Amino acid sequence: MASFRLPHFTIASASGRPLVRRPCYAKQTTNASGAYTPLDAMKLEPRFLPLTHLALMTAVALMLAACGGGDVAPTAVPGSSGADTATPAGDAPTGEFWRTDIAVGDSEQQVAQATSVLLADGSTATIEALAGGKPLLLYFYATW
Amino acid sequence: MTDVYPEFEDEVAIVAVGFGSSQTVSVMNAQKEKNGYPGLFTEGPDSMVRTFGVRTQSTKFGISTEGVIQFKKGYGTASDAVWRERLQALIDG
Image 1 (cartoon, each protein chain N blue to C red):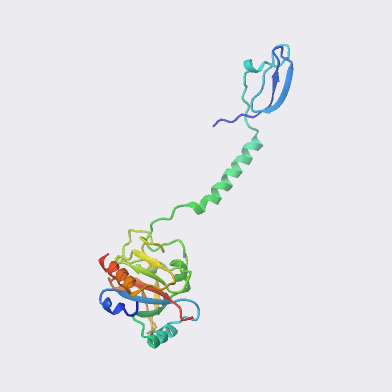
Image 2: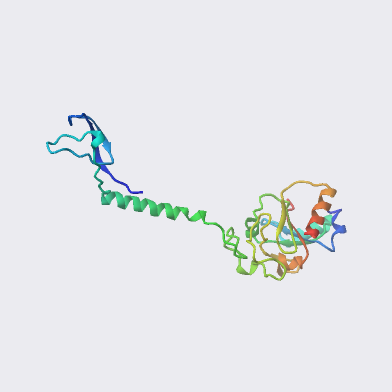
């Protein structure tokens, strides 16, 4: 939307005598004798925003754009939940059993992250491998 | 669930994950032996709790053969009938 900023307008009587002066976004014209143009005959002359205002608006727009980065929709990249960037890439579903075409996440209808866990014999395996192609009941357990 | 699982042990895998600094794999397996719990008891990385959005102990995920989360249940008890229904739904996909 075009934006004009003009200093004031004045509501004038039919004779051009000023009655009310208000801040305005248009420049009011005067006739040859210097009297203000009556409101119904007023011609608006656009003026552009000062450069300082443009610079300020640009800076605000850039800051808003930077702050809006958190609203970016998650990408359906297998193995990348976005919630845990420290997770090794090897914890992504391998595709041997688990789907790789659905977003990894922690909610229903998302693919579980194939996290590696430590077994009693000291080895590690992903929960995808431990499920071995069966449905899996994953139970977060604590003895306390 | 411990009573119901033997009916499904050939068709559904159970992996228990210990979380928190004290829940080592040896502590977890000692608990398994003591209580006769079914399934494989393991120790997960600290990041796993965040990855799965776990906020309470005893959170359970039902995951399909394709790795898709079918249900996520927090702490709470459920009857054998409810567990039978949940496990059967996992098998049926």
